[in-house]
Image (cartoon, rainbow, N blue to C red; front, side):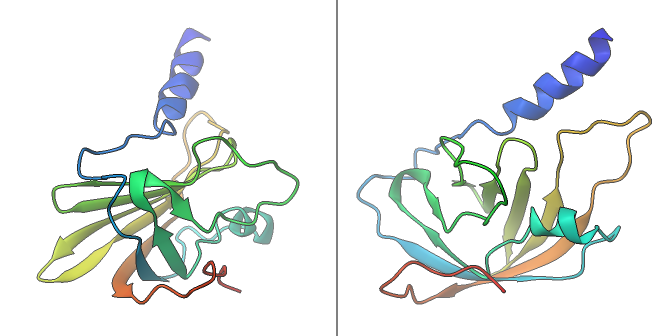
Length: 151
């Protein structure tokens, strides 16, 4: 029983916003267009809806990320969504407290590539593989209004 509690606690610590020194409060807003491949293993429609990563994201100064994933029947979670940048890695995190989605992309030869992981608060024993999808990103012009979610 103690091991199960530790697993849940360790998972929750990943959701705490970390703001890198490089995230100045006066830095300009930057937008990226994200392209996701297919999730593997495939998720049910209900699971996929909780991990519907927006196609266009806006990285605000101070680590705030928009838009949020349109979760069904949940309230906004304080500190979510957020972004962090360390060295050549950009981390984007969305969560409703039960189903975090993490996108981790790396800058390689001028391109941003990486993967998305669909997490959950359920921790079966033995653990099942979490769905992953390949991700690519490119800098995009920020629209004057908030970017909309991918349909």
